[in-house]
Image 1 (cartoon, rainbow, N blue to C red):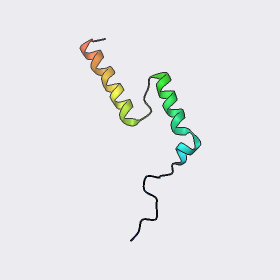
Image 2: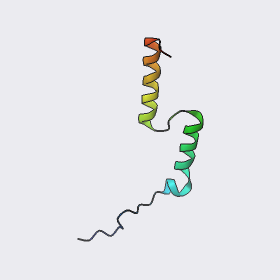
Image 3: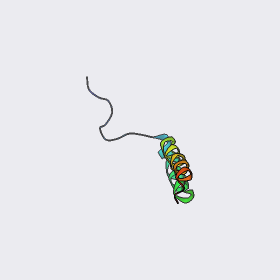
Image 4: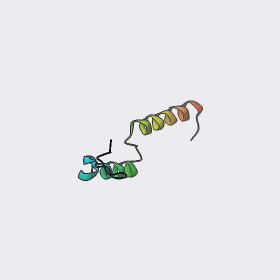
Length: 55
């Protein structure tokens, strides 16, 4: 069975509308990640720093 999709080519409506780029720019300007994993990592580091008293 042949794959009807071209290899290496995918379509994303979010990239097409510019949502991905806008989120990336916002994250860079504010310093707050837009991904779930990034937010969890940032919150975790803030908690650890507050407990240990490191800057």
